[in-house]
Length: 267
Image (cartoon, rainbow, N blue to C red; front, side, top):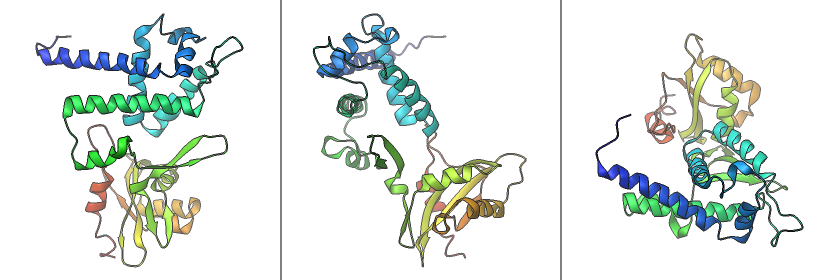
């Protein structure tokens, strides 16, 4: 590998490493977190045996949370939960703590948020209007909608801006996408709402078929009739060669809404 001659690269790498370490120190400021790390039974994550690993774990959290798929997050959560199950206080601990304590998890999340905000300001300066709105009031408003169950587990339902309002009902685009993904021959799918003169918004699906399957729009409609309630079924199905995405692979539904906004008008 050829090392870059640009001194800025060293600055960026150094700042990133220092930021990760500083963020770990901030997290340890909460007694439950600090003693949890000090008394950890998990040798592979012991801060004193593997000081850089905790910084790496912090970066991994951020990467999976911001750029990973739902399946990536599920797998990562499963792996982390297996380790966190071993992190809890006992009768000899000076403070009571548990890695699954929502307050401790919120503290770590707040530290990560603050670190992200500081790095963003350092490298990119003051945010534009849209980004500033997302960070208003010292909180990062992701726009995610979720349901909190009796055990305290949060299940993400959809993005607020992707929720489809049709015929007086709210339809989660994520639920429809997951249902359509179960149809053989579907490689990718994006579901969104477009303006409709009667229903306010019409559920619309752009589907990328798997190569060589010969998938048709009618097959998608037929599958939807079997697995979805009537108001959740796509009124329009469009087959496409691909979906518009940003550099991190996120589907740009805003572009899809604009491209297909006139479907209802055309019949």
